[in-house]
Amino acid sequence: MPEDQHFVVVGASLAGLRGAEALRAAGYKGRISVVGDEDRLPYNRPPLSKKILTGEQAIEEVSFPLADDLGVDWHLGAAATGLDIAAQRVTLANGTALVYDRLLIATGVSPIMPQIPGRDLDGVHVLRDFAHAVKLRGALTPGRSLVILGAGFIGCEVAASARQMGLNVTIVDRLAWPMNRVMGPEMAGLFRTIHEEQGVSFRMEAAVAAFRGEGKVTGVELAGGEVIPADLVLVGVGSAPATAWLRDSGLVLQNGVVCDAACLAANGGGKIAAAGDVAAWPHLGYGAEVMRMEHWTNAFEQGAAAALALISDAPEPYLPLPSFWSDQYSYKIQALGRPKVDDRIEVVAGDLESRKFVAEYRDDAGVTGVLSVNMPARIAGYRRDLGAAIRQRATGL
Amino acid sequence: MVKIHVDMSLCEFHGQCVFIAPKEFRFEGDDLVYSEEVDEEHRARVERAAKACPQLAIKVE
Image (cartoon, rainbow over all chains, first blue to last red; front, side):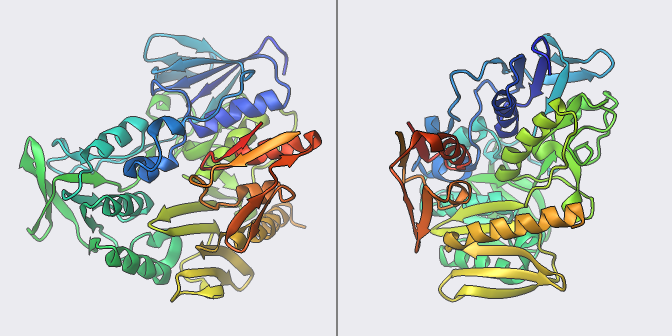
């Protein structure tokens, strides 16, 4: 790509930063502009639900280190509001217009706030951004009662952090088991037990009817009429791709920005790609199933892959090994692959009783995924083997 | 020489460094061990490993 070109990245978080870094590493010397809606340089989100809340890590320490020669024009505190594909122009909330030669979309996701009465009360929190974490951290005072709506990873991580800080914690979810979607009921049951031992109460298979209070939340009313007292509430029921600014652009939006196998956006004419939580692409290692991943490792890898696809003559399919982790209490949970609900689970190292184990998920074709609890040393080998298997399936070798 | 330091108060044993730079980082039992100094020729790999750490626990000089 010639040096007089302008590469614009919309989204100043991990995927966008990795995109800019990958361009420089590939020798691109032209202009790079990065647009971010928050008034902050890129920072690392995972600590926001863990060590930032408990105070084990200072909030200033989450900024990503930036190379002196990265050479990026930052447009921060300026959300993108529109995209004109024909004019190759992105407009920002502050009135700026950026004309691009190549565009990487990495706007991530926004937390979903369900239409529950009382959702605007003080003390009802979501957690995604730096500002959310600062606000939530300020409200986590020992002895207060926290009700968490949603038993996914964010909810369970905040529950662990809040219990460590001496709050009373109740988790409410419509589903039967916490973190079930990724771990299966057997492993989810183990984690429910761990949280219960730490003093967390669960109200599973329960729907929330309303948040109660005058000006400030004081309780969470369940569908049956029961009210759980609450000094604060965290809503962690999932996220939606941040694509509102692309609504009239002509790009294909369907649970994210729809891309081809190399992360180039449909209808983007080869000049637009998407990466990170916002990108939906057919994964050729999984039968071209369209995937969207909300995990750190994917943002890290896809940011680079999508940026390079935009300056490549022959973009390669993006073939990541799904990979995620969670830290709760003293438990380090790591998972690889893409297990299905009816896969067989076999503990291949350690044992469930000691809560230190590696479990393989298998179907008739072999290992589909791996879950490790407090045995991180085993994961590197699986990362290599499962990654190789994905590339083999994709190339049909 | 390239100097490596891992802040073990931040390390959560994700093992990304072990995967990317197995010569410099490895697990021994449940511990992460790493080379504190390596030759300049390995700098690129070590820096890739540091960048891939989700905890930002690895410093390379």
